[in-house]
Length: 414
Picture 1 (cartoon, helix red, strand yellow):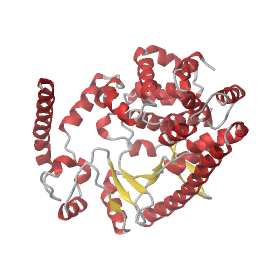
Picture 2: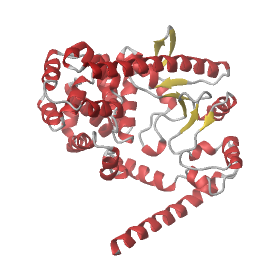
Picture 3: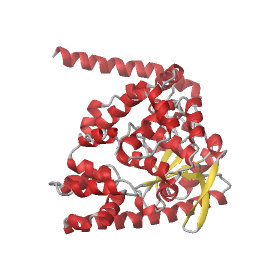
Picture 4: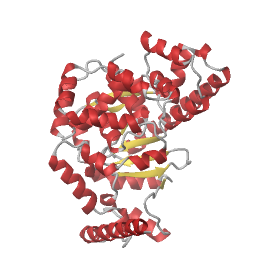
């Protein structure tokens, strides 16, 4: 075990140390001994299961315990974990079948599409779709096909979700009819409740939103597609190098809210020992995401013993901020949701992870100036000129933060 990992894991409660050591597909002798030693200590099993649930690592936790030290775990707990494992396996199988049907539906309607994360990632990285938890299906189409894709899903009886805004029936109709409304969807994805309400479909036109200033366009991704086989069907899949860029980008954007995000990176690195690290580093630098990628892989190295080549370790040493970023993430990774919301300042963290000044400026200006659905709902028309909402946005933001500051000042005075 490396020194960084020893120092990191030792600061966590026993239950979390146990989860981290179990959250990997292949367990070496040293890690197996650590797991057995941890199991001699007093374990709050319900707390452990709760944390594993929150961090979406129950399947791999169960597999490791079952294969390594099942006799050291209370039978009741092992049975509980086994049931959850089987439930997840059956659900993943169901989602995989539904994914293949969706891909076939899009193909029949001449809409180029491919899936990322979900079943393809589970299969190519873990080698087994039952070892990864996922609750939705992520589809990616080009921006020019987003209206066709949206209309197709609506026609099939899938209901679009509206999180940020509340719409009347006529406003919802205007939203669905608009051919430009996607420009105002901040996260570059529509969410749909599948027609039988069993899961969510996310229809993306960007894998990472443009405001985040880490461009992984569909045209770029399509230049280097591979294939993965699901239920005897071969489908397009991202290359491992681009998956690594994507996973690090998603983890950073979401402030590393789950251990499973780090597990995906660690397992990808282990699954592809011939990974083209030179290409990954070149793309990370070109896209202004060197800190994003290096902090992601360093997390996988520190917590899950993912092997990193000298090329990567040397680049980590060149930027003192990377180790600081990783230390901060490790400090808040297992905080409960309220503590996380109190400690994590998303805007500041995102700026911190961008090494180029121009990307910091783009990120800040994009958030402040680019209209969102919250601006559109002020005048919810299906065909109103987009320029109007660009004029509304700065005014609305100034009013919003002026009122927020007055509220803070009032509380301070009181």
